[in-house]
Image (cartoon, rainbow over all chains, first blue to last red; front, side, top):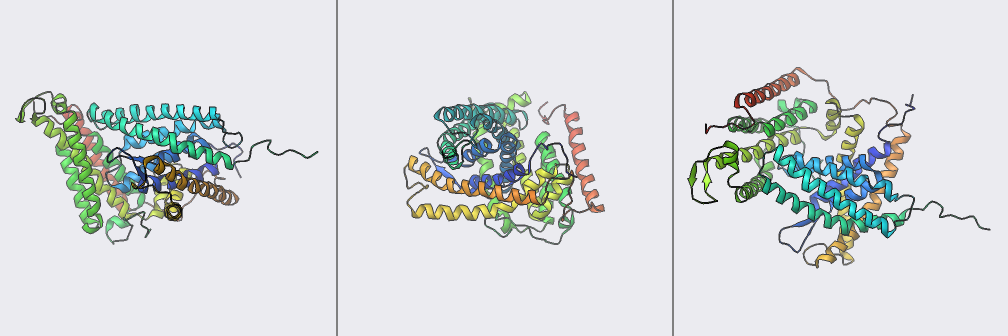
Length: 188
Length: 277
């Protein structure tokens, strides 16, 4: 018989993690936008992570970031860099926490909410790339602080810009396709 | 998976590594790369590199299959090592608490300690690569989810991973189609367009991809719900295999190496091996 107790993860979440990870992987591997600064690219996987988190919540965000990054690292060949994989998972988790406030499925995305989302994503990126990833590299891989903080800052700022522009556009586009509660009125 | 998203494809090459179950290879890969991450003893790392190269040889993976990737790894490693040296040329002597200058003078003088530290980091990069390749190239992707479940990951998460592997080729194809049609409409994301136009072009590609993926999530999850996915606490796998004697042999060998690694930490009195005392 089916368990009466609600599972910690719904079937919809399982599928969202699976397909979300597939899209994350493809974006991370094939799609990078060159920036004006030489040899740096903006990664489109992170705006996607922001959107998936905002729609499906922290658990899905956590696993999409973690599994997607780990799969990409395995195939990319430099060996799985666990501290950064973990940091991407945490970023997904934090971005997913915005779901409760944004309520994309039922409410209109006001500009106030969009501001909140952007401030929150900056905080989340700071935690993931300025704190967790470099500290992890120092503790686990014993790399020098100057190098890992430089790498972390670089990645973090790229992600912030990417999410601020592309992520916001995605949120608006998604929100427009949803039906609001109370959008139907009975005719008199 | 004969698809361009994986230039590296699984193929049965008929060695004992192919006969080994996915679960024991996954566990072996995770444990060995994990212990290489923790124990920074140069001798131990050299041993692991040699071991993983021998395994790669045994697996009958052709050099032509992995050569491009190997080059990429070496470039990536070189960039990282140069970056470490430029930003922290004295980190090695900090760790080993001594300083013997090899050549040069001043701030950027190359010390023996820094050199040994860089060798450690370089070996650390190299160890994981042959192991990951062996795992990737000798494990059937369909068996992967079953292996994850066997080593204790909840089956719903394992199933998500297999869904991801299943949908990567589809999403890749869809991305290429959307990207081509957007380029036909004049949305460019390469260097030819100015930066903000690139970002706008990227969004124009992402929005259709996003909406179709969300639709796909809805329809697949409804189909799975109708077949009562997740109704029970356990699940059986078409591809799961019982562990054979071979698997136990592999696992005990891996465990032996891990234990040896921990003994080294105790003997060395820390994660680094310090020959400069």
